[in-house]
Amino acid sequence: MQQMDQHPRPAKRWSVGRLAATALAAGALSAAMATMAPGIAGAQMSTTATTISTTKDGKLGTILVAGSTPVYTLKSKKTCAGACLTARPPVLLPQGMTAATAGAGVDASKLGTMTGDGGSLQITYGGKPLFWSSKDRGSGKPRGVGSDKFGKWALVVTKAGASSNSGGGGSNPGTGGVSF
Image 1 (cartoon, rainbow, N blue to C red):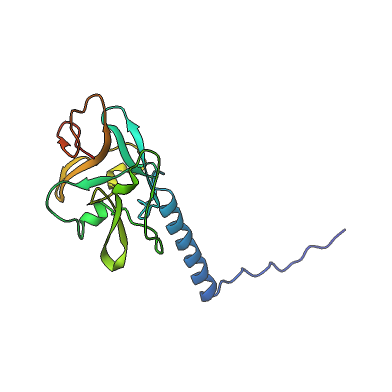
Image 2 (image 1 turned 135 degrees about the horizontal axis):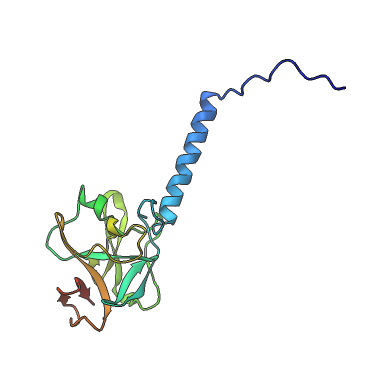
């Protein structure tokens, strides 16, 4: 018969360095997931995009998206700064990139950039800066149209839907979209 060890193994001790490395790795993973997964419920809104494309919305028509998340423009003459940038994160290019890629249905000649805080490049369409809405987290549907304390917001509509009656470059108060 085999004799059992009478002395339990000592608990594994974690050094301060090992704890710090584990915490940093967990934080990096969390940040990477937030950047890669803007449509997952509970994930933070992405801050970067490389491609702007279109998707069809039954009421609005063809709208611009970054990934699968709708993008918006600020219709009022205000600028988005401070707390506004938390509710309406700017659509930024990843560091090192200088231009966004035009996906399906996007007029590449209308894509551009403007310099934001810290030298980051914010993607523009038709000269207007693009933003996400924190209301769209996890939904994949546009929920950020209309007015809030930061201004009036509109989706970018590239082709009006059946219920939309806006002309090129105008706005449609019924849908909250801006046509390009």
